[in-house]
Length: 174
Figure 1 (cartoon, rainbow, N blue to C red):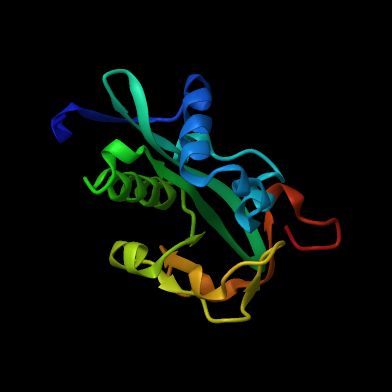
Figure 2 (cartoon, one colour; figure 1 turned 45 degrees about the vertical axis):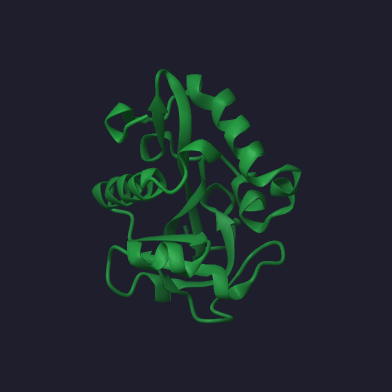
């Protein structure tokens, strides 16, 4: 397999079964208990900002983006990002993240956050969110909360509990 054989496409509903298999393979049944999964349960992800990598007509990797809100801030939640084991360490995941970040910038999203490893995501422009600035609906390692600012200062507006953007309460500002 050559990287020339990999094509990158916007995600479509037809990709859903393969994406689910990739996420099951990468994260196992424990994925349903994760904080980011709980947020994603609050509403749909943004298909126009979510992408797949294909090889020979098969999905080999995917990344999804979900609209979130915390305090007066809005952002996208990146993830899950998953790559089939046979295709890891080839730069496919980094390419998908770069595509998702570019798409988020094009639609005017001020910030992208994720729960992930700083050594992997740091070179892609993500920085640690200060401890205690935001909270997740389930336990999470606070050192793994990272943000990529598209608009300077956007991460600082994210405060308190992170929610899917569709789950903003009636008394909260939209």
